Length: 97
Ligand SMILES: [Zn+2]
Image (cartoon, rainbow, N blue to C red; front, side):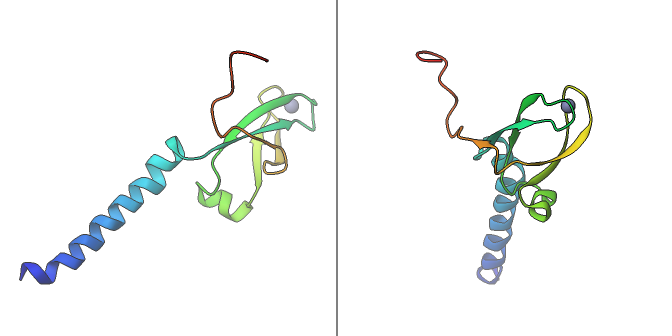
C-alpha cells in the first residue's frame, strides 16, 4: 500500500519544493539585475532592481516594465533589459569608486 503512494508523495514534495523555490527563494536570493533607467518626463536617472521571469507580468511584457518615476511619480514604460547594468555580485565599495 505504502509503495504505491510513494511516487505520488515524491511528486507532491517535488512540486512543493519547486513552488517554494520559484515564488519565495528565487525572487529574494536568486539572480536579479539592476537597470539604470532615465525618466522620459523629468530626465532623472534611477536604479531599478528586477528579477528575470519572476512574475507573470514580466513573462507577458518580456523586458518591459511600467514603473513610476521616484522623482516625478509619472508612469512610464521602460526597457529594463537594454538598460541593464552588471550586478552579479554586490558592487565594490572599496578601491576605485
Ligand atoms: Zn520622472
